[in-house]
Amino acid sequence: MVRKRYSKKSKSVWRKKTDISDVEAHLEEVRRDERLGGPASLKSNDELFYVERGTEDAKSDQVPAIKEKKNRKRKPLTIESLLKPVSKVEAIKRKTNSKDYNLDLELKKKKKLIGKTSNSKEKVPDNSNSQQVYSLWQSDESLAANNSKGIKKGDQIASTTKDQYKRPVSVAKIETEVPNVQICSSGASYNPAYDDHQVLLRDAIDEEMKSLKKQEKLDRKLALPENFQNDVTTWKEEMSCGLFQTEENEDDVNSSASDDDIAVGNTRTGARRRLTLREKRLKKIRKLRAMANNDVKLKKSRMQDIYRLRKIKSKLNEVEEISSKKQQTKELKLANSRHMPKRLGKLPYEEPKIDIKLSTELTGSLRTSSVEGNLFKDRFKSFQRRGIIESRKPVGSVRKRRVKFYEKKSYRD
Image (cartoon, rainbow, N blue to C red; front, side, top):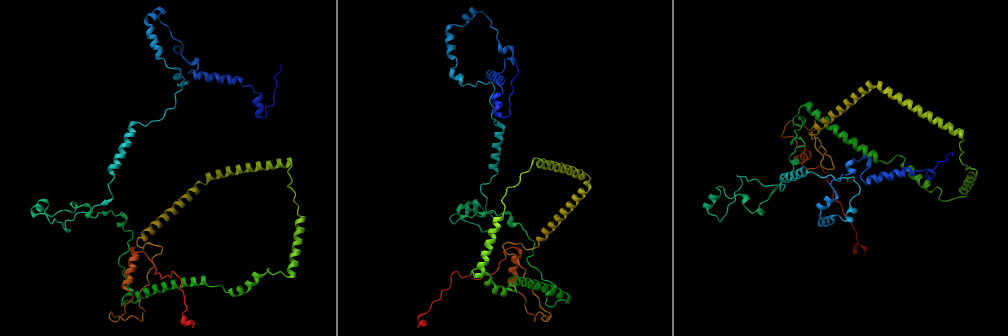
C-alpha cells in the first residue's frame, strides 16, 4: 500500500499529520532511566545483582525475632522517603568563601581601624618660650618637684585650651610667582633718559588707544541705524495695512477666493500606479547589481590602503608632531601663567593705568616734581595681583523702594 502524503505547509498540519509517538516513547524511557539512577546498560554487575551467602537456617539462627522488630522500627517512614530527591544528580552547590578569605577581610578591617586617627585636630605644641602657667595655691617645693618650668598646658582642663584645626595642604601651596612689589620702568623716574621715557610714553599711548577702540566699538554696537526715522514713519502704515477693508480690497478678496475654489476643484487625487512584475524584477536586479558594485569598490579601496601604508605612516608622524607641539605650548603657557595674576572671582584682574609724566612736566629735580599715582591704590592692586583678595568693581547704592511724593496742604491752598 502506498503511503499517503500530506501537504505540510503550515505548522498546524505538520503537528496533526506527523507521527512522533516513537520519539515520545524514547524520551519517556530516558526520563525513567534518569529517575532510577541511569540506564541499566551502563551499570556494572555489582550494582545490579548481589550474591546471597549462607542458608536460610543459618540466617534465622543469627538474627532473633526481637532484633527484627527493632530493625523494623528503625526503618524510615514513607513520608520521609517521599521527601527525599528521586534524581541521583546532585544539586548545584553554592560557592562558599574559604576561611582564609574571611581572615584576610578581618585583618584588613583591623589595619584600617589602626590607621585611622581619632580626630583631624592638631594639638597646639608646647612652646617653651611661651608664657608659663603656674598654680597660685601650690608651694614652691611642690612646684620644683613637678617641673622646674611650671605646669604644662596639657595638664589643665581640656575645656580651657583651644585645639587648632589641621590646615589643608593647599593653603601653604604657592600657585603664583608674582612679586610682592613690582619695580616700575626706568622711564618713570623724575629725571629719566630720553629713550626710556619715549618707550614708556609709547606704552601709555597704546593702552589708551586700546581703551578708545573698545569704547568706539561699544558705541557703534549700541547706536541706532541711520534709516531708523524713516522706518518709524512707515511702520504705522505697514502695521495698519489690511485692517480696514475698502471696496477694492473686498473685490480682491472675492476674486482670490474664487481662484482658490477653481484650483481646489481641478486637483487630482489619484492613487499611485502599482508596479508590474517585470518592473519589480528589473528593480530587484538593479539593486543587486548596485550591491555587487559597492562590494567591489570596497575591496579595491582596501587593497589601495595596503599600498598607502607609507603615506599613512607619514600622516601619523605629522599628527604626533602636532600633538607634541601642542603639549609644549600648553606647558609653556602653564609656566607663564605662574607669573600672571589668578582669577578668583567673576571679574578678571585689570592692570592699573601707567603713571607717567609728559615731557613738559619733567623738571629734573625731585623737590620740584609733582607726585604721580597713589600708594594706597598701588598696594590694593598688589593684593589683587597676588591673589590675596579678589578683583571687584565699586557698586553704587541701590534704592529698594520707589520714592513717594506728597503735596503739602500749604501748597494746595
